[in-house]
Length: 182
Image 1: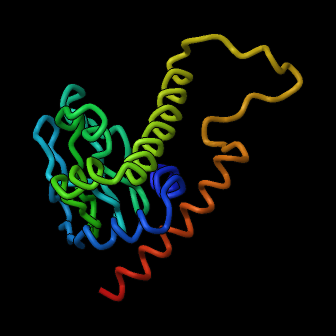
Image 2: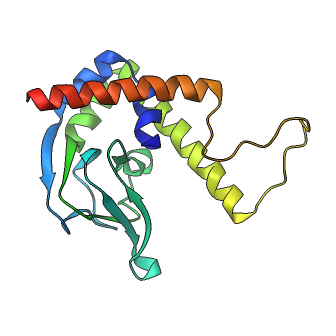
């Protein structure tokens, strides 16, 4: 759920209300492809229920990750406008909040406050993911600037991130409540 916590934690309540209003609930059947590698996508997705497999064609469609409730999908295509770099398939029946790409693009162009929140959230999340990947690959040297402090595990959050994660969790709960009423 870390992706959603970063993103929802950076946004404000009016941003969340817009996402709920612009989005639509989509049921995704087991084994149904939600996102296909190399093909443009029509939406930005927030996983509400279910588990999804993330697979990469260059690795013979090997699963590289699983995502579940609270994760977002399709975020990278909003950063660089390239088609998705992985395929996402439902492992079981799932439910997503789908925000149409055209509506999200219009909102980002028209509402600078929303755009600042959205792009900051993506930047923070993607920077965190890149640092984790670089660390896993063994690149770079340990930071010796604070030798008395233990290195943080990639899954640990600093206090600012913890505040955003807490707020993101509350906002995800808000989305769940409102979607049940729809």
